[in-house]
Length: 214
Image 1 (cartoon, rainbow, N blue to C red):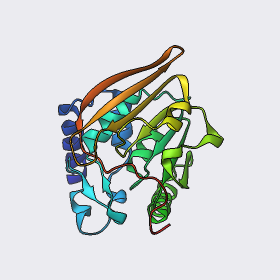
Image 2 (spheres, one colour):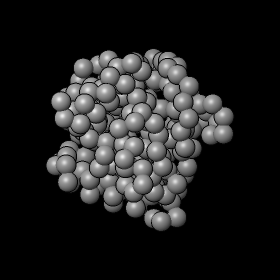
Image 3 (cartoon, helix red, strand yellow):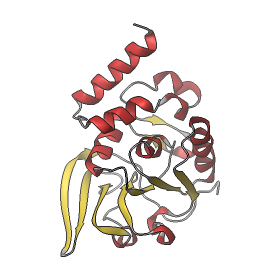
């Protein structure tokens, strides 16, 4: 077995051991190499199950958390997905293997530019990257079947709740940015919203406005 094959097998085993069991999600995470999304001195740690720093003071989430969040979304091949917080682009790339169309927004122009370069290099043509204030969502393309937020808010943002289809699912971390946050699943019903708490997490805070670089 080559080093690459063994490394990929260990990577998938680590995901399964943390509770990522959905076959479509595992296949997507096997297809999308995390390496191109990490630059500089941390690139050699791309296959470890740990968060890593990226540009603009942001982080790339650990693969098991990416997998669990993706699994909780229950993305189907016809879905239109909105991601708030492009970051490295890794999460959007995973979603692109599962959904019909992915829209991803980040407040940092540099991150959007670098993520777009990786998407182009990998031939991921069903992702639209946008520089903007993700807390407002993307009204022009609403409603969305699924929404994923990769930064923590004290409560699920109202504009995102409005832009979720009835029957849709949103996954996001909620809580104070300097305390323990919880990953929750929000399901929109005709009668209102259902909430399910998944696990404690730690994410960067969801901030309004554009980053200083954009």
